[in-house]
Length: 419
Ligand code: AMP
Image (cartoon, rainbow, N blue to C red; front, side):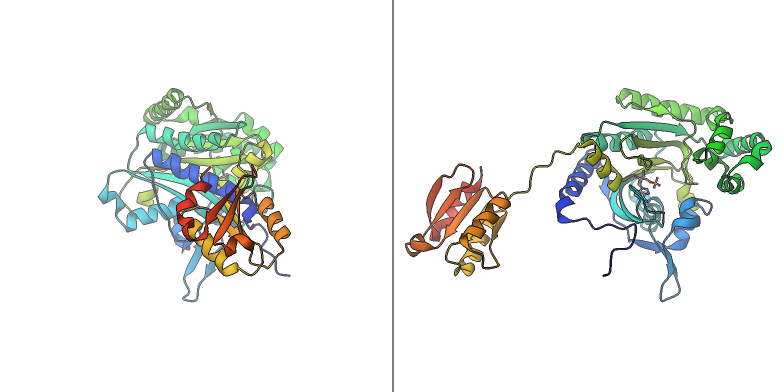
């Protein structure tokens, strides 16, 4: 038997209502902040991500689904959205049409990571990118939106962590200081950290190895070396969050994996999903647009993982989804009237009701069982003496009340289903 590829998942009809719920909340919240949806292709030229995300990052160095297509172009399934949105902004000169572009997306992403609970190879993110302003209120907005979405799903065990990475000048200066501090400890680091020591020294703060963590415990922190303008920006972000009533903590070790961040970085963490606890991450990237060939344009964004949010909701039992139901089930009493059943169903379906009838020639008993199983609010009995008289019986499945209706004028009675 051929199975789905490891790390990919089917979303079955029994689970789809959770996805609809989240997607609708995302669209509503993002809409209220005036973000417009953008959809970009599933694959892009590999060099977009290599240049946009950074060669030294985990994503580019080991996780991308990259292949050469039949015209010898190296293409990559998108591992994240920011680089693709920035490409679209530049390609369509969106920044010439308006100063500030506020965009959101809901999209599958692809990373060849080791699959485990909450970590997949195809997963889905919703997120936003705002391009064209340095306002600290935008940084705060990027935290408020996912926080509001996540908490409106009923999740309680969530924490917001924020940090500032400042600007490249102070960061380069700090990296030298960090390197000097860590050099005497180099031999004690794990192999992974030894590599990162050269390629991406800030990531040493992310190491899960106990020994590494011990060394990093007393290491100097970037936040202590920020320039005044960066500190002022960070103050603005914190104040807006405080004013908005968003609980947050400052985590000076939150460096995040991507190269392109400047100033604010943040994560929303859940206490109820085990080791893959980040529900959402993001940050400011004031240099990326230029790096990808556009005009200097400040940007900020976030991305949240839908599978992980669903996992957290399931673990906290926070979703209150109404059970699936039908408005109407049409019972073909003599099992010889499926054409009439189809015609009758269409009358109600075209009025927006969810209607089903039997396509498989089942007995009346089995059809009634099906009507009950699918929580039908009403059943319409087609057949018998009534049908000969041009009538049909509408039964309220909850109260048992019955009403006789004229088959020829059902259109007039569709409102009866509105209860
Ligand atoms: P990142 O783009 O790495 O900052 O990730 C943003 C969010 O996407 C994370 O906080 C997760 O919720 C989600 N995410 C990232 N990688 C995966 C993955 N492999 N599987 C499932 N969700 C993921």
